[in-house]
Image 1 (cartoon, rainbow, N blue to C red):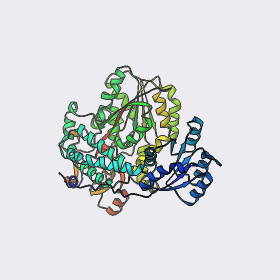
Image 2 (image 1 turned 30 degrees about the vertical axis):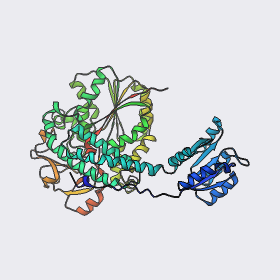
Image 3 (image 1 turned 135 degrees about the horizontal axis):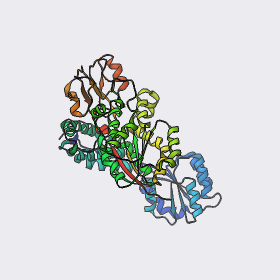
Image 4 (image 1 turned 90 degrees about the vertical axis):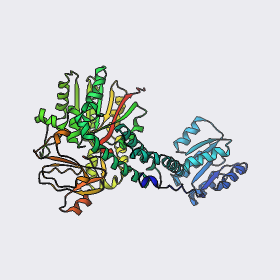
Length: 532
């Protein structure tokens, strides 16, 4: 067991906080028992009997929550509510009323009340609404911490066992789940999770070193990988007479998929899985492999006109539609298909407008480049790096993009269609933070997570090296070419101008190497619920 697994957690500090409440009710004398109950719980309760006094108090004190009677002489509860919101827009107000009239409820909800209680109220009801509106974050933090603490040891044992790829996928899912949960809290266990993830990355790299070449030698006995997507996922649906809409979001990680899940879960029946990208986890290799159904060296040999070498200045993914056609031809398929690459919002809007013309095709393939563009922009732009300063912010931008792009409209249209929707990616990315030195000649590629060249100098203990590219399904630009891959959060830096290079690329999102984030990527099957 590692050092991390022996760490002892401290329980959440449960010091009682003296929260300030304002209770507004013209019959406040009848509520003395309730007020005494709250005071015993540690709340500082101020009481007034009318809306005017409530407004005066709100102007003087920043209350944590207001309990507001709806039916009072003078100005009504609804009017008081509106005026309180004008003074303190974020102050939570709970409406307390005898009335169950729908229009009153609608007006109160429209004025953004925090909760709605029907008289007579009991102390338990009041305490529950306080927990929801005042203590929500600390309760969520405490529950998340306790649950992660219970799971911590189990995950540690899993990491250090000899896992299958399916077990690694489940471990990665669990770590991602806790990252998403703890990132929404003020938990001190975020650092513990970070250390556990780093431990997992180290062990996962060992797993890939041990198994990757065996997978390449025995394609019939390997897990689902990039060349298998069409054969194992797309064609079976086409064989059953179903139409398929394949969405490939470039550089799309599993955690990003999870934040999009809640946005579309109401529209689709969803079957979630992960598959393993080939190496290098780079668009040139992985996506071309998806669309051709072949490993890169076979593409280069069979279709040299469709393969672009590393040292070429030509775009590496300009032949994706022809590669799909080669795969259809190889399997003697006569299905009709379209291909679309979306690089900006106008192209996405145009695609949505064209949908009525696409329904007649058996297969529609759409490649979306926004997240990959965001990843590169974050490296090159200080402003974008500030906007996506950490993993949580990076996910947040992904979610904002989805909500405000034509992609949301596309999903709604697909949910109402007869298409089977497959959502996937070619690879993910990792926040690279640790530089390791490598030396190469002028023909060595520029990617920070993998290198291919004939005169590479490096520490073999720090990388995964492939000295015979053909055995790994990779093209060899020269007879003596070799590939090396960074693992974990490492990235390659040249000794020349080393410090500047490291400072510029440290904590940027990169891909091409070996990590769970890059290799274990979403492959989601969806079918619309077709609600009217």
